[in-house]
Amino acid sequence: MSGPIRVIVHPPSPTGGRRVRVDGEILGLAHSLVDLAEFLRRAGLEIDPAEAAESPWIDWRGVGPERWDPEA
Image 1 (tube, rainbow, N blue to C red):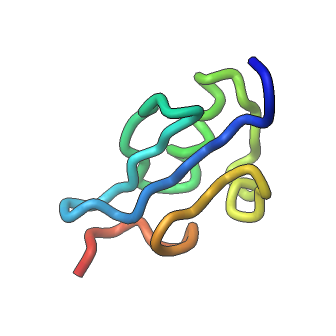
Image 2 (cartoon, rainbow, N blue to C red):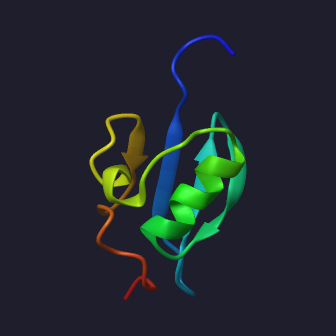
């Protein structure tokens, strides 16, 4: 793979959880930092859940890592 890996965590969905994409591929719907870290691990990207919130290669869309529940 050329260039930096791009991880996007989309805003919370109307039913809760946040869609996670890596380089354009949807990995799933995460409901916590632990879920996010597991999706990334399965994609070959090891990251501690505690470090995910501050990672410079994760693009948090809409809101930050503290919000996983449904949009109001």
